Structures are given as structure tokens and as C-alpha cells.
Image 1 (spheres, rainbow, N blue to C red):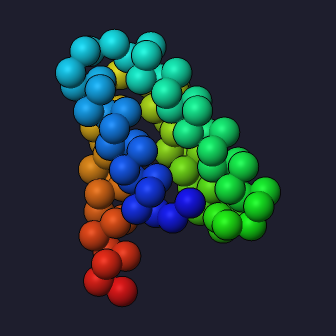
Image 2 (tube, rainbow, N blue to C red):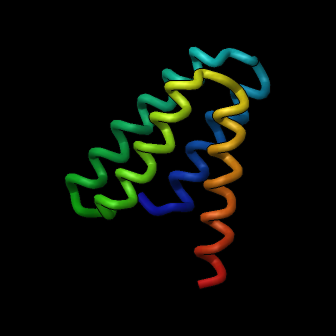
Length: 87
């Protein structure tokens, strides 16, 4: 799973949260993303360091359990995608 795909999955979660304001539902969807990232890392499709970065980002969201935490993570991922296009 590449950065862009992770971003698209996360964006779908964040967009759902903006629509229905249900943080618990968004967290449940985020847990699925953890599993996908772990699976991709085990298959060596995904770099372990990238997986750990995403897990740290998602752990912060889980700790805060707020729309603001999702929004900050979204902005960071968006910046990472934009940077990766430039390099």
C-alpha cells in the first residue's frame, strides 16, 4: 500500500467523520486501516518505518478521540503526499 492509497483510505474515514460527526465509527474504520498496514508490511509491500510512522499518527488520534485529531492527521498526510509528488 503506497502513501497515496493510505491517504485516500484515511481521507474517506475523515470525510465520513465530517458528515456524521461519529468519532467512534471513524475510530472503528481507523482500526481496519491498522490491519491493512500491518498486512502490507508483512508482505513487504510497505516499508516498516512508514508503517510505524502511520501507527504513531493513528495512536495520537486514538488517544485524543476528536475530530480535531483526525483533521491534523489529514493535513499531515496531505502534506506528505504533496511532498512525495515533488521528489
